[in-house]
Length: 364
Ligand code: ZN
Ligand code: ZN
Image (tube, rainbow, N blue to C red; front, side):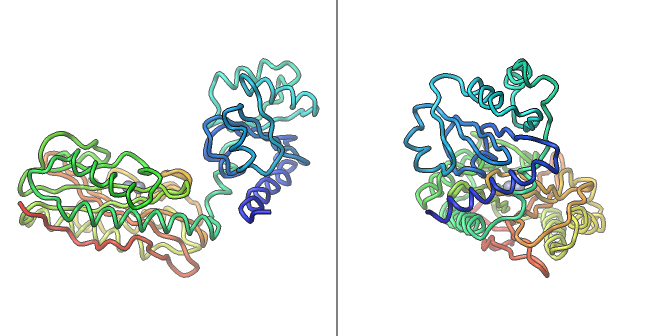
């Protein structure tokens, strides 16, 4: 038996034994990261039903071989839509209270379930259960994230070595993604962000076709996916000498990021980390220009709970993988963000991202 298969089976058992406390007879998991988390299946069509005693996985004939290789529970190959097969299985087992993932299932699937007569009035939305399980990572998951971070930082070094004013944002983004793949990443963990000058004031700007001009800030926000797991890093470049204002904004964000990193430890709440960053920016009179939360969990998805924002009271636990990424965005001027991927530990955090944090000056 593969150790990984054991891990997936252990996760499914945890769900099985948690059903009663949630007043459920079964939980239905649709396609997505939760399905991968509970089965290891990486294909594009699948559903999983977990009852107190068993787990059944459905996919279509394209994935028959893959399911044999990846999925250790009972697997059924369905010709045609999967949902009617799931409904039949639910009916046969006399499931009365079926939990479903309200954030993941489509309305069409919900309607199909609701119209399956024996289950009427027995559908129970389950918000965020598997997502909660996913917050603390296993050693294997942390190893995958670690590797994604390393690939990410290496690709950044290789691509940025040649970057200078005159280069187009889309070319730098393409170079970053090409390098990631060459180094062994499965793919970028999300659409690479490269934005220069005033465009950097948009926290999620797409790379554009305009050349990067001299004397401009350039934000690079990138992630690599390795073994299904994501990394996330933001670093700032500048073409030529930065102005005093740029240096000041940069220092403010850097100090905020270091303060937030300092606040990360098992037992602290997500909102305490966020507050640490905001307090520093307030000292610079820049807190109103910090328009998003300080960070987020990451793993099979680039954005996972917890959210390191003003309102999230989640208590951080050792083994959580999170980002720390305060930013300042000034319309007409530009934006600065600095982001690391870190793992929460008992007395602090381990910063995985090895890339230096100073503002990197490029040829103007
Ligand atoms: Zn990012
Ligand atoms: Zn991020």
